[in-house]
Image 1 (cartoon, rainbow, N blue to C red):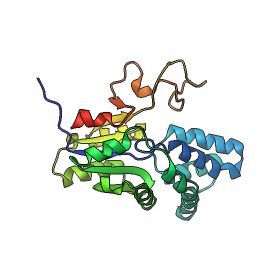
Image 2 (image 1 turned 135 degrees about the vertical axis):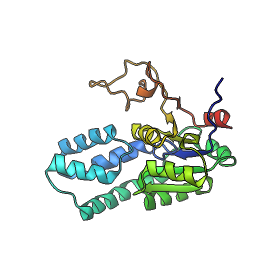
Image 3 (image 1 turned 60 degrees about the vertical axis):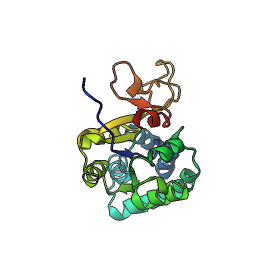
Image 4 (image 1 turned 90 degrees about the horizontal axis):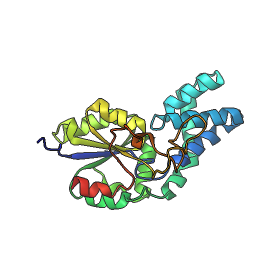
Length: 236
């Protein structure tokens, strides 16, 4: 019988994976675009929720081009990003953790190198992680412009292991795709689930707290957890 692949490095996403900050960012994107009207702001909300884990700079350029008919050059994107940081940083520092996060980090960090790979700009991410008192758990904290794929590949090289021995833990489809592209394993973080009938009018259950998450729906083969402390017994 084949033995399970040993995990030698863990890479965590941040928002929605370690800290319950995803709703904060959704509200901030919406607020940032409210100046262009309620209809634009709500479309920004919808598009953001459909592309969580994607760089904000990619989103800014796409939204300006497709919703406003405007170019968004580097200076304009930087201005938007700075405004976004002002809206979210203090709120994220104060946001609750995902269930079991600190316990998992405390125990896993004693045995394995841990990293963060996030779509948040790295300077802002490092400030948030430090102010939350989490820096000591991680061998490295990486945000954009470094991609999640690059982080997975680089830590595999740094620790002289195969990409399949790296575990990516995240809450977004972009996290799963990054793990797949890099050849890493993946575990999805999902909220609790109940009745599959709890979907919105377009059939989207991903943003409804009492709905079945797509990764836990019948037929899905994605390994998931709702409490990060369960990683302790499964990995150590």
